[in-house]
Length: 229
Image 1 (tube, rainbow, N blue to C red):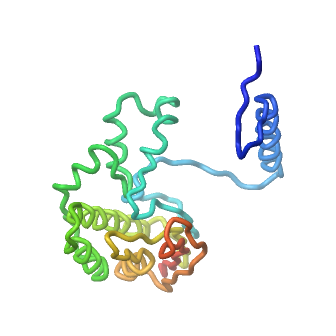
Image 2: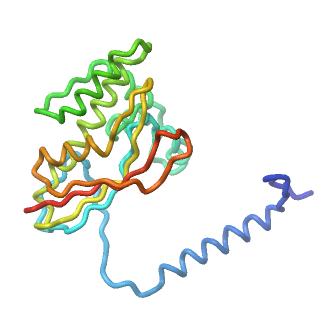
Image 3: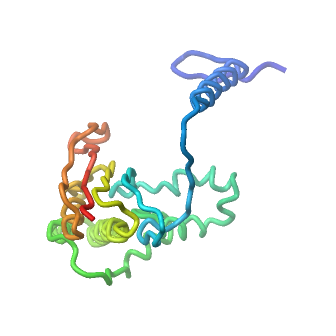
């Protein structure tokens, strides 16, 4: 039986060559992990919007949450989620995405129509941004304005629940991107900095770390803050 070939940019690789390449990359990654690093790690499953109280205190928070751009990680990863048995039915994907910050897949989108914030004051810049998006004449403007509001509402809940898990002087780093809706820029770093200022954090700042290729107005930022304790 002839070997199946994979074509990429007019170069053909036999399957044996592809698997050999994958194996060599995997072995390189595994060997880099065997460097005798000290310490230990633990993975704990919690809702990022409601960090539980703990006896442990942390000096660093480093995370890259979803961006407010309607890209659904659940949608993109569904084949693997089914394969690994995290999902059994299509509806489960929508339910999982509704629990995720920025999720808009399936029923998560329809639920936005009836979602309302029940929490207190949010940053003025967020209210201004949502109003600008909603006031456009685009068909889905009200829905996407609600999407942006819920995204930053959920992002506000995260640092709001963090202080009882932080050491005095703990540093926070959020790797995030901005977005645009109907020509209206969603200034993610400014909104997050305003949220953290409202919550008592200090030394908020942001810097561009990457120009994104999808749109000349889009960037990736490192948004930082310090918990004074």
